[in-house]
Image (tube, rainbow over all chains, first blue to last red):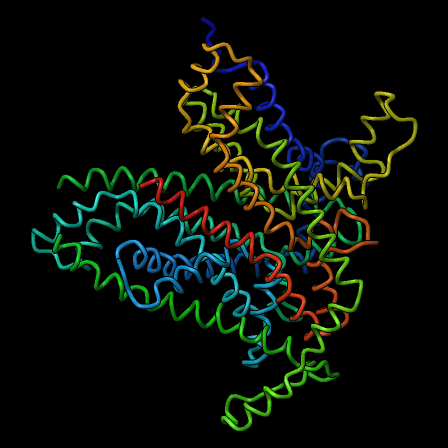
Length: 270
Length: 304
């Protein structure tokens, strides 16, 4: 009798190599952002020099501000509409046009971004809409609400429906049952959905490039145009700041979802 | 049971806002892509000649349809540049997806074998890079791969090469970038199926005398095929339309279709050709897209 050991040396090695592959490049970038030397690859000691230069780069600051505004507003709208879509898909059973509805919700998840960006730009041009903050926000909302819908829908699907039914048996109308019982239970998924929408919007280059107008570049558009001209140490600094911001968002959101899920559990027996 | 029905009505009403939004900002825009792809190129603002006006009524519509221009599609078919771009996109996507499978499988396999508590940690560790900006991750590789970058410094220090190797603007750099960016998309579905697998099956095969590679090839791998399919499609489809990674890491001599579309649109301002290229790209992707949808449906049904 020969038992397979659960974890072989090969498993450990491939896992360690895989994680190193995923993390080392980011780590190297963060370390080099504190490099005093102008040459990106020569180590000249620790320094905050590039962060100083970054804060004097008006165009970069404006792009970052634009990106943050777009990310917050599009993530918020996407969370509202995406949650509604998830509710309709998982609780609405059958309704007219359901196939088209779910098709439209899933398609942007896999479609190449160039196509989504191009089609939205053609719409905005046809509507004669001035391109800038709102057009990018609308474009990002369209893309990210699909992700929100998927995240929230999977949580709704795993929920015990007898809780909702009990609330209605006790005299709640469906809307109140949803607000009092279902909503607290799916709150972690809604938070996760917002977070996903926020980071996706912050990250997007292709769709934003198509839908924004002159003079309102987002951060990825700025970074992209700088990177194409060659490596500059300021870019390491801005990238490190973005990584830090996303890390903070992840920590806050995971704390929030932990909090709301424990609240949901304590509220349920009441 | 009746409570379920009562719940269904307001839930259906919840569909209204997202439905209207998606029709307005997803379906209608496609109509525009289709319309403009069938228009004539023109030097104007906007740079195309409208072919028909819905407001003009039936008669106008009929004559418009008679005069519908397929010139842009004819151009796409006749110009080698586009053909090469589509072929190159598909070649790159196939190669990159194969590499991803080769690299992602052992990692997912290792994850699935960890003790349960560590599996959750490993999963978070795989997902976190996905949250950091994808442009930043590509940029991190430019830092490493450039002429006097870290990779060349290490290779020189180890005396593995005598001169700096040109990495940037090569296909190898592009494949590194693509594999790096899409690795989580390959690992996660693979891990999901491998973790669900019954270890007793592998143990039984091994007890019956199968050597390790046979256990893997005859038991583990066939059982993980749904995960392989999901991972392959999840990577393949977006890589075909990839634009940023080849633009920043690959050389400029042969373009993928995403880049061609971008250039046509922004540099040449040929909107009809760009639209037609987008439609052909969609048609190329339709098969894998439909496959992906079927696979997902089947997995959902199995999950229930």
